[in-house]
Length: 239
Image 1 (cartoon, rainbow, N blue to C red):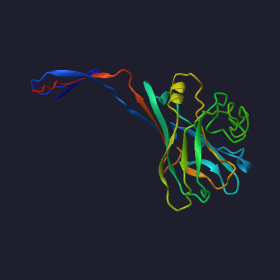
Image 2 (cartoon, one colour):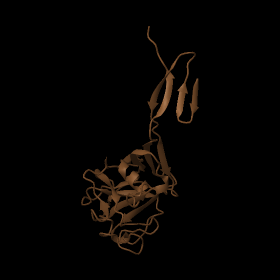
Image 3 (cartoon, helix red, strand yellow):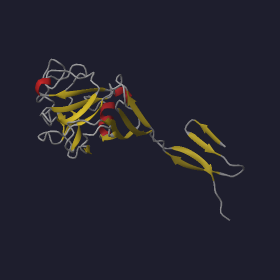
């Protein structure tokens, strides 16, 4: 028999005694949907003044023709759970693309608080359709536009020019970012995703954004619920 009363789970077997053990609940929050995730592409060259906030694409890398593509992404502060956050990640379905000739690695950074970008207004040239990015166009300046960690979370990806999607990929992030946004240690300006080698062409990672009607990306946050709860289990005796 299992009984639960507030923060104590009690398991009783017959007339045996009961022993008390602590356990910790480790749930995961999933944030999904265009209404709950802000994301937009940043494209240079002829697209530098175009906003892609409603576009269904998540991209990072460089086209065969030379255009650089990056993504900024943000989850609402109110969606970040209480408790101790232990991990966070972006889950995105990768697509086959003619511009995915070469393998590469894309890394994730925290956007600097000075850049309060708008999903429906941000472009390569403008952070909100009016103002310049704090450092330089395309959220390009380390330390001013984005915070470069010593070892930023990253995802290595292969070439993928075939006709089939490449499946669901896990893009790691840093747990402390979510804690900092939730606790207002710094402004929630979200994340910045870019491919490490933006000189080489044809290394595009192409996936679905939160606005996709097919398989939209989503964000998972792992956390613990605070202090361990008590669990009463049968006391075992050995004769």
